[in-house]
Amino acid sequence: MNGAESLVHTLLRCGVDTCFTNPGTSEMHFVAALDRIPGMRCVLGLFEGVATGAADGYARMAGKPAATLLHCGPGLANGLANLHNARRAQTPIVNIPGDQATYHRPLDAPLTADTEGWARGVSGWVRTATSAARVGHDAAVAVQAARTAPGQIATLILPSDTAWDEGGVVGEPLPVPERPHADPHLIRAAAAVLRRREPTLLLLGGEALREESLALAHRVAASSGAKVMAMGSNARMARGRGRLPINRIPYPVDIAVKALSEFRHVILVSCRKPVIFFAYPNKPGSPVRDDADVHVLARPEQDPFDALSRLADELAAPPAAIPDPGPRSEPARGPLTSENFAATLSALLPEQAVVCDESITFGRGFFPATYAAAPHDWLSVTGGAIGGGPPLATGAAIGAPGRRVVNLQADGSAMYTIQALWTQARENLDVTTIIFSNRKYQILIGELANVGANPGRTALDMLDLGNPDLDFTALARGMGVEAARAEDCERFADLFAASLRRKGPFLIELVV
Image (cartoon, rainbow, N blue to C red):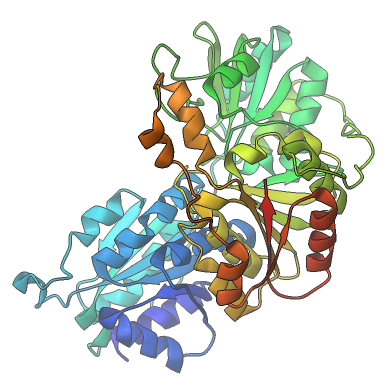
């Protein structure tokens, strides 16, 4: 057995049965082992950023890590942006880049790179295999590291000779550390704050946004008078009818500061103190007001359901019914405004859909308008790295088979990873991609004003996607995905409903 074969056997034995790939020469023995050993689903992406982003979406929905197979340091570099997003989402991934053979590396061949150094910025655990005999053990440790709460990227770098040399040994699965519980002192301290009835915010992130934890947060809030809000970008959030309708911290700095201005106390549950995405002249770095006290109920690696349950018990909080979000909206008519689109999406979104949101500026008002939609999960691009949406949707469709995935996608950021459509067609994935085609980097036009710049023609041309206009229907068809364009709500509603009745991917370009 060679090292590559021991790697595949170990991954399968440890419960990793899906690999998102874009391999090269150094990885050919790994590719051959995947061919010889049954049990691993191998999904090809035409760009490493598709493979890494798909691994992120898969693990968020499947609740277990996928593997990635990337080509050397430059291939890892191509995948770094979506590994950054996955790190911010606390997603478990076993990330496997190849590398030069150990004895070839000193010759400094053209693809030689600081693969370990590049990996460290996105990984919680990094190791380079040193021999075929160690690969299986290293792989088992990587899976253990990836699955350690709250989840992290474990990068195992595989020099090609450690893959092709004989002497591989299959690694045994290692126990995953039990998720720690919150400190009882912090539970009592949070209860004491809530009993004071001063304006208090329960701020939720991570797994505190699952349905059961949301219900407990509502029980605490209903008993104490606190309010509940989510972080601005979240790995996975349970939403829709029957789930607690809460909003997120807004992205624009002034609106975010205003949204949190009433709170004297902020209690963090599975998240850190929120910060503004960027520094702006004469504006604060956090939306939390300077005189507010910030308390930690549960750190991201701790069990939020347990912490909220014990907090509710400490307060003797009675059961509380989830508020009725009101009637489900009807499909809107007329122009494709943000409000009309959100109403139509809410009306037609199917039960247990998975929404992958990279709608950027057009989608900032979608949350309140979709409270009454059918129950669904909402996945955000957590790290702000552009191009997360299409790969995220691709992986989510594999990680949650039988559920329709809806990718809400800005046009500019779609072009970073448009190759994901090809993978969706190849795998016949149930993904509806909705492109908001305003033909500009609208978010950056707003940022010019936020930083106090006074743009002229040259600056505005750098943010314009016209001349020529992008034709997303032609791009999609060229990669095997059926597509159509809509310029009003009626046409969008017809196309969206039709996409939900069919198998496989479909793209709708909305001219907005």
